[in-house]
Image: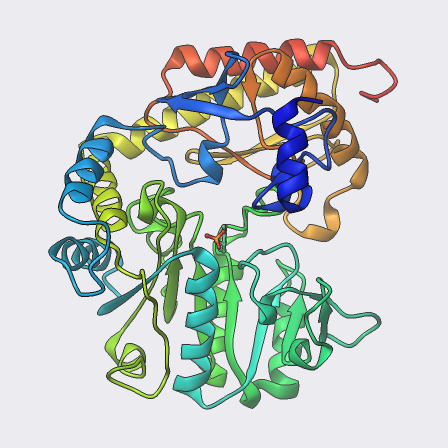
Length: 429
Ligand SMILES: *Cc1c(COP(=O)(O)O)cnc(C)c1O
């Protein structure tokens, strides 16, 4: 173990600031990152890797994109934080509203967690109702009302999925399986008049990539409308990435509130929620739903987000991301086939999931089998040794960015191919 890892573990729980970085579900110790540029990341040993984590989603332009670095540098010279509204904030708000035309206003916060937490408070404030519904396998950040898993037995009332979350809180959250309109309809029939909102990742990308049908999303929309509940699309991963207007544009289903994060900050800490005036008018200072932030709308973070969106506006960007994603998907599928390892590769645009189990790629959390995760745990270190930086968890997706060239994608394919070949034969069965 390196001296730095010793010091990290002595100074921070697990040596990290976010749990998955500790490599608990894969073999070996986590490398420390020295720097990153474009599609590659370099560790403190001087080894470089093709990066498919992209800071867990924000870096749709790759690392240290010159336009973003320039914008941030200019912003920094003008002051790090004002505690007052700045022009870049207004411009970024307008840029988001242009992409989400159903919405009239934006509120900026500092993370995806904060965006969803605030949006749920807003939904409760706007409807005067208390209950929220979420789906198993969707992640919405680490605030109390969403750290909830399905309860036991037939009850849909949630149970805490983390110590420190009072059961009393989670009783207000119902947890249902994805891809099952009947269960949602039954829940609405039972207590529809108490439900403030249904929260969903329209493209669930935090437990693999559980691609939902448009029919399911439409059905959720109809049930919400019928029972007077708001529909919250958590697009912290999918927003601005799978299309300029995210899954709202791709599915044609219009929610009442959208939460954004990751790409919207271009690598800086930014979250946001957007909604029509009828809902946003409830947010303080216009309305009675309180929500605030010392560093919200930070000028440096706004500059990074704005520069990122300006780059994404260039012609052919999303087509390019899609092409690169398709190339990686094809290459990985061929590698699985060549090495005789059962699996599939789910993909929407530049988001991919390597799913190491036989049969069709799952659509629900319950269909993900644990053997695949165990195999991934062994594969991960071998891929790292081949120069491929993948997420240290089988349940996390991979991202390509505009900084990835065909050459990087092909290296990612060769690295996975060699890593698969190096697996012990009994493991790959
Ligand atoms: C990452 C993520 C969050 C949490 O965002 P943080 O910035 O990590 O707090 C919430 N929802 C979804 C869908 C996410 O992918």
